Length: 480
Image (tube, rainbow, N blue to C red):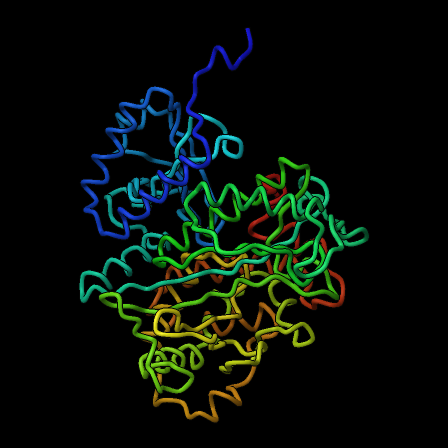
């Protein structure tokens, strides 16, 4: 008897998935109370007999994505007491304080495309707590959620983000784990910007990823090959900062699995190949209250309000201190190369794409700032948290002049060692993250930097790829 006749696990058509996931997103956007969400989804899990497991996700301090599958019946009995060994997660607990809890964030409930994630599963994100059920400081998702909740509770302000995350598609599965400098990566396509053939391998991958994103409720806008050969970018609608970070993690996870299903590797290394454009993660950000865009002002400089310019001034003035958060790998500093439109200049511009901050053309609804220096391997929760806290609270003696903004305040750190030094010595970072989290993050970054050549040189080194925090190579990591 075929397995399909024995097993009866949930598989939902893509159009129905999109409806379910959009409804779930709208419940959170409408600020449905958390206890109502919990009751709704626990009832659904109880009633839906074809579900076998719930995937609970969280991200570590560096942004590495972790997933645990809980049997549905077990989760229904124990959803208030899910525990895991935090000492096995780099940057989290020491062995002597290893037990941590996972609190299910029911607002993140999502139905999954079964051809990508397997049948019979749904997904939620978790919030990490210590043994005493207190928020765990190294859980930046929890911190970002607390910050966005605070915005709403104080005066119903919402931080909106849209992310343009680029990546590369390479031949063979596990191309990063098997990387050698002598052979490098093998491109699957040499097609150009916007012009790959409809049945090109890169375009088929993009189509498959776009379909899965649509089913997950991303509200797609456009997708296309990027400037570099074998490079891609898929754009989707702006949303609340926490949801934007969750979707970015799902975007990368889905891209990797769609690529693996095709016998290829989706990579989010910022600069996997020297001599061609790298990958960025441009973050378009605005604040709104009661449906009004707080960053817009008719007649204002470049159409922006004084609040938006204050936000920009604080980002520029503290850019070097938070550079490690936004560019958190050895490889990321290859991308900050002025020969490839690198956004390494601490300045703002409406047209110059080497500026750290760009002012896109916008109107009352779309006025925003674009932070171009963020690398695609940044921890999105930490990056978005730092951008918001810095833009609103970063030290600023006095507003910058128009000339200072346009000429700039210098360049971002040119290597990870300089970035670590600025990050570690920053009083503002210590106040924003807490000294312990600041030290833990710097420690993780020093470890990978010490395992890679100090001088970048012209070749992408084997160590900077294999020791990259997003490359899953547990055996190699455990040698240290």
